[in-house]
Amino acid sequence: MDTTRDLTDPAAGDPRARWRAAEDRLYPTLIANRSTYQLALDQIQAVVEEVRRRGEDMAALLVVEADAEQVLASACPEGVGLPTDLLLGVACAVRDRELTAASERQRVQRVVAAARSAGAEWASLRGPESAAELTEGSTVALHLSSGTMLTATVDPWSGGPPYGLEVAPTDGPPTSWNFADRAEWLAEYRRRRTELAAAPPGSAGTPTT
Image 1: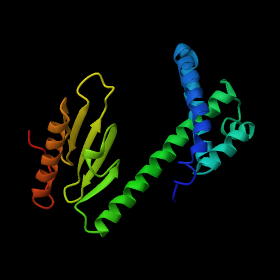
Image 2 (image 1 turned 135 degrees about the horizontal axis):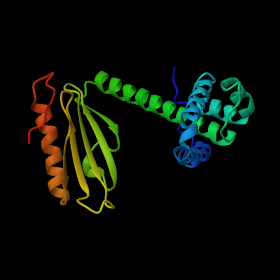
Image 3 (image 1 turned 30 degrees about the vertical axis):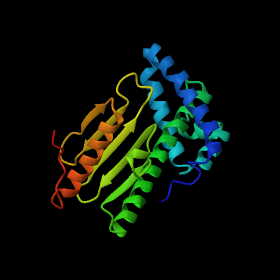
């Protein structure tokens, strides 16, 4: 089932802010009160399970939020020992992240399928197709024949070398580098792409040093 509906709507920002605020308020309280910690976690999990049963998009989460008493009664018929607004907010936050992750997986699958169908060598998963277009943020490309992920980042606020590069093969841990010089970073990015393109088909693309 497609879970992308409503998840990218700008209007979702307000409820997400409420739910994240509920997490920020509730979890420190739980840590400070160790005697009820496990019971509280059990209640949160029960409410999350109930929220999962009630739909797979942002609209369903908003209905859950509006019907808080009924949702909590179904999830915890013996009552809850936590503030109801915080309990439901945390459950909605958990479910929202699940749906967002599922939506992102579906999007990536569509991008990869379209790239394969077009006979492309690479699939651009996030950001601009070329690292040269980056002034801030990241670009992620998947080398289709090897499954290797190539990520280029620019973080001018890092306090260190602002340019980053990571090669993540399918058969080993990722390897990363940082660069102070943009030209050097771009040259290395292009070299890695060329290296992957020249690898035998099916190669895992383990990076060289």
